[in-house]
Amino acid sequence: MFQKMKGTYDLLPKDTGKWQSLERTIRNVSKLFNYSEIRTPILENTELFHRGVGEDTDMVSKETYDFIDRGKRSNTLRPEGTAGVARSYIENKLYADKVPVQKFYYVGSMFRYERPQKGRYRQFAQFGAEAFGSNSPMLDAEIISYAVSVLKALKINDVEVQVNSIGDKESKVAYQKALIEYLKKDIGTLCGDCQKRYVKNPLRILDCKVDKDTELLKNAPKPIDYLNESSKLHFEGVIKYLNSMGIKYVVNKNLVRGLDYYTHTVFEVNANLETLGAQNTICGGGRYNDLVSSLGGPNTPGVGFSFGLERLMFALESIDFKGDPNFLHLYLMILGEEQKEDGMAMLNRCRLGGLSSDIDFLDKAMKGKFKQADFLNSRFVAIYGELEKAEGLINIKDQSTKKEVRINKDQLYNHIVTELMNPEPSGCGCGSDDSDDDCGGDCESDGGTCNC
Ligand code: HAM
Image (tube, rainbow, N blue to C red; front, side, top):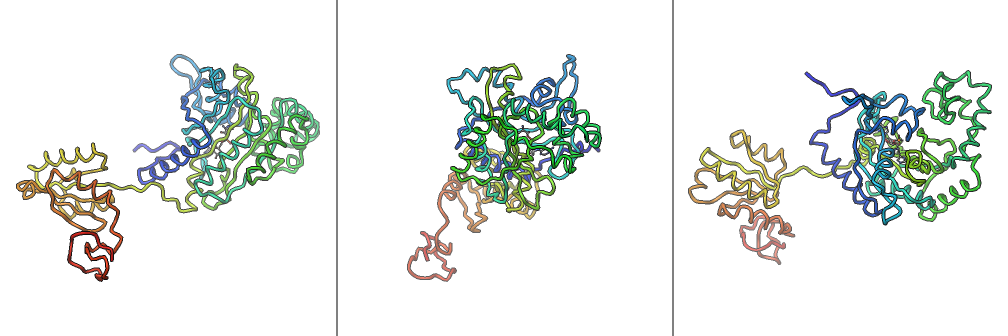
């Protein structure tokens, strides 16, 4: 028997309602912020990630799924969304669009060869947003506020937003120098990878999974202390706008993020919820002013974030998020071979009219059919047998009120729609037309609306 690959999972129908509801919230909030959906390929040229994300990052050097295709080209399953969106922005010349600030969001699968654990998969889903074309700190603040608004809309409140700045290119160079100097005499105490990074890309030492928590790295100089004037001003601007929008955050001087494209603002959102386990970073992002130019596009600044959707789902567990309910409007029960053609016609009519409907395909006995209707959470159950056919009628029962009626079979669709549009009677539901007296719930009249 085949089994799913390590680090992947099946999303079964019982859970897809929650995901759809989560995605709907994401789309609604995205509309409020005026971000439009972009869909880029899952496969990109390997080189894109080497140049975009950086070949010394863990993601590119250790975690990508690369393969040579039949045309001898090197392909990579995207490990993240930003590089592909930037590639698309350049390739489709969106920088020349009438709207100079282009704002996108995406929802889709990413692939990283990581050690799987709760909240960490080899195929996982991200919701990300990227905005190109402005260096204004207002856009950094908007991106953070957008991420926070998604969490608010989902009612995930127990979160902490951490922000930091690593500055522009010049500030990063100044910081790198200081870091090299600081590590010079002790670099031999760090892992082999860090020793290589020391030569090739010292900044990546700070997010080394092995040595990150050593005293040496904890006491290392902080990027925020090496910002040049314009980088300082930019960060002050971001903080000012976050404050003006009432967004709570903490400045974490140790936050650098593990990807090479970042400049200026970097941020993460951590959720302090038991249902998340150790992987509690639900969102990460930042500004990347040199990414577009490094990929061959014009000098265009950008800023964005990505949420891990599985982690968001775990966070939602803690607030007992139900998502979209699974239900049917109609479960049609056909009794006898002769009635099946009429049954299929009625079913089709209901479906085309917008009623979610199903039928028993297994000729189960009556008890089994009712069980199915219950499992499928059907509001109405209709029975069509030999007798009904002879009279041109159909029996229909409203499972919520237990009210049963026998109607002309051609009225099935209209009947259900009318019932669905009529709000529940405001009284006890007994059907009495007496609006003054208390019927006690056992009134036998079935005309009019009970208001007692
Ligand atoms: P990242 O921090 O690598 O950033 O990933 C963003 C989020 O994706 C993480 O915070 C986490 O929630 C989720 N995530 C990452 N790896 C896994 C995994 N193996 N399994 C489950 N979830 C995972 C980026 O990807 C950047 N592209 C973010 C960005 C967008 N920066 C600017 N724009």
